[in-house]
Image 1 (cartoon, rainbow, N blue to C red):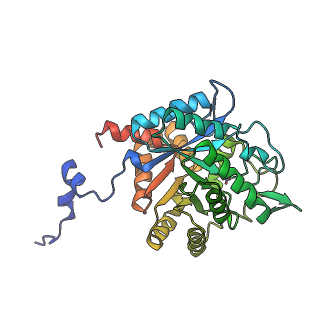
Image 2 (image 1 turned 90 degrees about the vertical axis):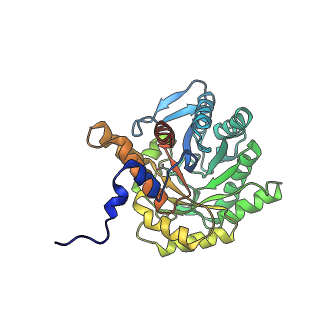
Image 3 (image 1 turned 90 degrees about the horizontal axis):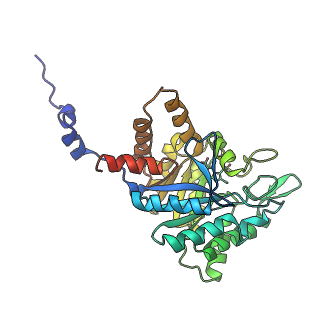
Length: 327
Ligand code: PBG
């Protein structure tokens, strides 16, 4: 008779033992909740492709901030639906715009809630691209100043962290320079250093009203096939002064999350994007999967891959589930 020498099953036998030897633990403080801010009052527009996600006016954004506080979620990431759009995305740095107002309102009402702002032009340009267009192409250098002004307007409104997501070369340096010049040396930059040209952003474009009116984003966002290029982007952004690195999307890029984590000594975030969220929602609504288990397994995988924090539309649900389980 043969008896196995090693029996890994011994450490899986009871919930207590499994908990004791668990290598990765999720907690509410891992999450950042993305929110879509719009003008008006008591506005709560459902985003059809993202069940449970809404475009919210500032008064309702405050309710979300309050919930985050109750659930132990450290912060929110704000995207804006501006009152007007033009070729240059002028509304991105308008101090009266939805994002700037929401930042100020949250910091006044709930100063403990971290407010991170997405810095990009695509929600603010009439053409829906993340930079200025000249001769049918997204121009890099003329865009930098607009991004820097946008980040500065967020800092002036009270943002704790700015998060550039446009993928122009040199934007972290440009934003750092502008912030430092105006007394915001203490505001960290959370850079979407590694952002792929991904079809997983589909539902977000409905939520944020930021669909390119022509072409696509492949001349500025990364090719999904590339990993070494991700490390180049990270090195460049760190050299320009980035404090936190974001890898986006998350699910199909967990190898990238791991590589960035091993390659750097700064905090690494991953963005569990709209399409990843909607896939789970749709399958759950059809009764094909167990939503809670699948969502938690995905989030655990992201953390195991090396993410120190996860930007996720599941933040409130996941924090609630953890609370229910006393974790
Ligand atoms: C804007 C931006 C996008 C996302 C975050 N910031 C869309 C895009 O680049 O097309 C996607 C977020 C998501 O899908 O949840 N540059």
